[in-house]
Amino acid sequence: MTMAVAEAQKGFIDVRDMGVTFGANDNKVVAVDNVSLNVQPGEFVSLIGPSGCGKSTLLSIVAGFVKPTRGEAKLDGKAITKPGSDRGVVFQQYSLFPWLSVRKNVEFGLKMAGVEQSKRNTTARALLDLAGLLSFENHYPDQLSGGMKQRIGIVRALATSPQVLLMDEPFGALDTQTRVVMQEILTNIWQQFKISVLFITHDIEESIFLSDRIYVMTARPGRIKAEIKVPLPRPRTAEMTDTPEFMNLVQELKGLIREESLAAMAPEIKDRGLSGFGMKVGPKGVGEIF
Amino acid sequence: MGSMASAKVVVLPMIDKASEPEPAAARPVAAVIADNTAASDAPAPAAPEMAPVEPEIIPTVSLTTVFRHLLAKITRERIITAALACVSLGALFLFWYVGTRYKLEFYIRFKNVPTPYEVYQQLAQVGLSNKYLVNIAISVRRILGGFFIAMAIGVPLGLAIGKYPRVRDLFMPVVEVLRPIPAIAWVPMSIMLWPNNEASIVFITFIGAFFPILLNTIHGVHSLDGVLIRAARCLGASEFRLFLNVILPGSLPHIFTGLAVGMGVAWVSLIAAEMISGQFGVGYFTWEAYSLVDYPAIVLGMITIGCLGLACSGIIRMVGNLLMPWLAFAPGGKR
Image (tube, rainbow over all chains, first blue to last red; front, side, top):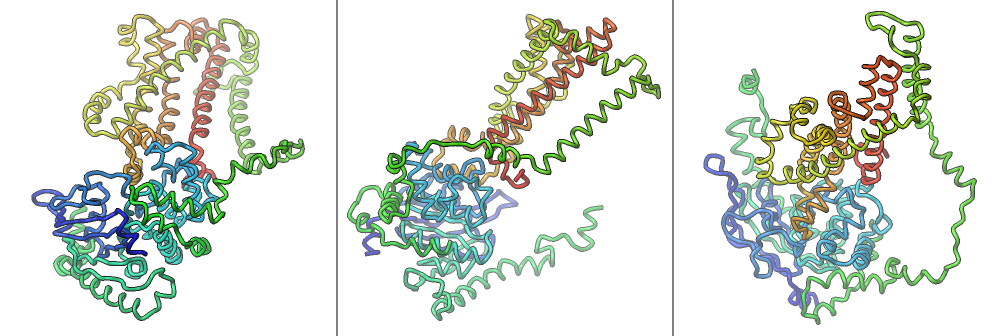
């Protein structure tokens, strides 16, 4: 049944030969180099890699905020040029509008689409109920905890019925306990909506728990280093994280990521000592001050 | 959180999805809603049908509850605040009273300063006179004129300058050159520019209010978190909608700071303009009193200006609180 549903659905992300370069001439930085990846309709795909590898840049391109230097990103065969409500985005920072009540926040996309008030209201309330936050519909975002805000961020992105959901380390700012619960909530919501998800994270366990497939990126310039299928059955449960299959995947990914994290840091550490970490130390630093 | 997670993994109308080949975009939310309604744990859509069941409820409010409600508002904090306000105003009054009562002279001279009682007599004498009230009305009219024009131009222009670098490049040089010129320095030029006295005074008031409003609005746009703009774009906001629904409300706190500061400067400018070139107005009333050696009237004029300024900024603060109820919960907010 799942396969049949997937085929009937839209939401196919196709990124081909993508390259992104920031700056010009001397301070030119190649952020992403020759990346190709795809997300099948209804599939949950994670992108994982060391910090600064360009994974957020990739997501920004699919979201339509950034234009690639080379290559292209397509959604259902159409080139992505600008942001749009066919792609829901959940950001790492809480991005709820502080001046709108929780319900009005969820309604925002529908309002922009010109949906009438009563219909907006019904949809928003149903989504808030799904997120378990219906009783907070008239609260302001600043009255809620981080986990609550992010759940609202997720259902707000879903309100306009996008074909894909793009998530940029959405649980990065949460504490470990909240994070685990949020992951379960997300898998449940995803299973209900069955839309494609591109999920950025640097948390290995998180990516395995959530994904059907994981792309591992190299250190800058970001390239695809490996593509790993997660054969764990659905629905995923918290107990699965203790199974040998899960552990093995964690080990495998840890190895891949560690190589890259070292590769990302090694030359800087070797060449410039602690200043490789962005610190100003020693006589040179002091000399610059006086 | 956890209970919700496990409760909602219900069988969903996937079959519906597979069979219907039309735009997938419109379906998922509707499908989930349909499911939730069926599961009858969404009270929301059912609410309108509930209404006729119990139509006989007449809201009754007992006096004791009202009284208790009012009493609950009188907290320890509020009492302390009110007490300190009395202390500070009382000290000022006492200083004035003692100084004038004993005609103190220690570098500053209270010799010619009228006593509180003299000022009170003056108030009783002119307080409800036509002349005094007309002066107040005219000053208020000038303030409102200049202030609202400044707001009507300053806020939209500030939003545009804050949002578009090109608009900024075009307008900011002029703003930076004109801004350091105090409104008072505009008096002679204003008299030359405008056909009548009234227009020139309103213009000076406008100049006073305009720059604080403009600069705070620009600052409001700049301090708006970029992720909110990106979020709005993803949710399908057009450029115009983005202005109306994100940039304007997002910069509202700074705009209101600008309005409050602008109102203060507007009063300063107005009074100065009225003293120099005016006919009528509270500033003119005060200056005329000095020319006529009517010292109690000077103090009355000053107190009038103080009260009017206080009322104006109070109204702005009140409107701000009404328009921005969320600020009460913002980090560093009141609650």
